[in-house]
Image 1: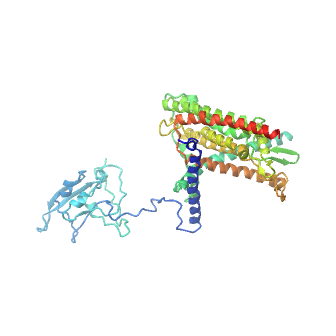
Image 2: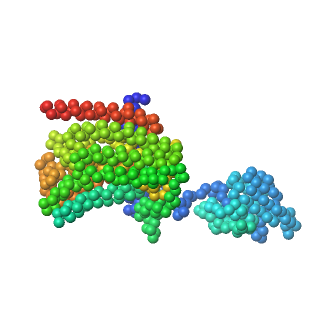
Length: 180
Length: 364
C-alpha cells in the first residue's frame, strides 16, 4: 500500500463522490418523472404485482395438456414423460381410447408441481406434442403439498400464453383433495 | 409571575430541542431507506398506505412503530430481569440528553428577557455532550451483559472497546477547536465562528480545523456504532448486543442509533460548520465584506439562524447516511488499529500544530 491508500481518505472520497453522483442523478430523474417526463426512470425497480417483467417465449412455465380437435387429450399415455422425468413427478394411469385408431389415453395424468424441477424433458420426450410448458403462469402456490398435485382436468383447462407473454387462463385452483 | 415565565421559557427551550431531535430521529428511518434506495438505483419502501395514500413511503416509520409495539416482548430465561429491561431506556435516554447543550440559534429577546437558544446553558457544554455520548455505551454494555447470551456479551464488550478508542480520538481532536475559540461553552464557540478571517472568510471550524473535522467525523461515526464501524452489531458475525431483544425494546436500540446520528450531526454543525451562523449575517443584518448591507429585524435574523442550523444538520445527516451506505465495514482489529494508531496520534499532532499556529499568530 502506498501512502495515499494507507490513509483511506482519497478512496473514501472517491466512493462518496460515486454514490452521491448516483443519488443526485436518480433524484433528478425521479423529479423529472413526477413532473411529467415519463421516460425518465430513476430506478431499475419493477413494481412487481402491478408491473411485470416481460417473459421470454422460451421460458418454461406451468405445463398444460394439449387437446385434439374433438377436445380429448392428445396424450396417448405412452409413459415417455413419466419415464424421462428426473424428479419423478408425473403419474399416469392409462386407459383404452374409444377410437380404435388411437391406442390409449390417460385416465389420470397428475403432475406434482411440488417436485417438478421445470427441466422441460417431458415436453421434449413427448412423441405426440401433447404436453407443453407455454402457459406463462408462474405464480402457483398452495397451503399444503397435496394441493400442488395438478390433475389432468386442470392441465387440460389451460391455454397458451398470449402474444405479450401474459397468461390467458386463470391459475387453476386445486381442489383440496383428502382434506385433513 | 416572573417564576412562571422563567419556567415556561425553560420548558419551551427543552421542548423545542426534544421535538427537533425526536422528530428528526423518527424521520431518519424514512430518510435512510429512501436515500439508500436512490443511491442504489432502487425505489425503496413505498407500500405502507393509509386509505390508499402512500406519500412516498412516509408511513413506513409509523407502520414499523406499530409493528414493534404489537410484537411479543420476549425475555430469555437466563436474562437479568431488571438490567435487561433497563438497558434500552438507558441507551436512548443518554442519546436524547446529549443534544441539550447544542445551540440552535443566538439569543432571542422578548421584552427585556434575553433567551439563549439552546436547551441548557452550560459552561462546559462540550464535555457534557461527550459525557452523555460515553454514558450511552453503558446501555449497550448492559444489554450485552444482561441478555445471558455469549454473542450479546461479545457485542457489548466490542461496543465498550470501540467507544474508548473512538472517544479518545474525538476528545483529542476537539482540543484543537477549544484552543482556537478559547471556550468550552458551545454557545461561545458558535458565536466565535461568526467572526471573519482576513475580513472575508467565515471563521468556521471547518476552515480553522480541517484535520480535526475529519478526525472528529470518523470518531463520531464510530461512536454511533453504525457501518462502517458496526462491530458491536456485526450482523454478519456475532449479531450483536441486541440479539435477544424483540419488540419495542429492539426498536429503542434502533431509535438510539438514529438519535445518535442526529446528535453527531448537531455536534459537527455546532463545532465545525459554524453552528447557527449564516455567513456575513450579524445581529443587524447582512454586512458583506464588499460593503453592501441588508438590514434585518432581530426576529428575522433569529429565524434565519435557526433555519441555518436545521439546514446544516440536515446536510450533515445526508453526508453521514452517504458514508454509511457507501463504505464497507471495518474488521474489529482494523477499527481498533484505526482508532489507536490512526486517529489518536493524528489528533495529538493536530493539537500541537494548532498550538504552534496560535503562538505564531499571536506573536505577529
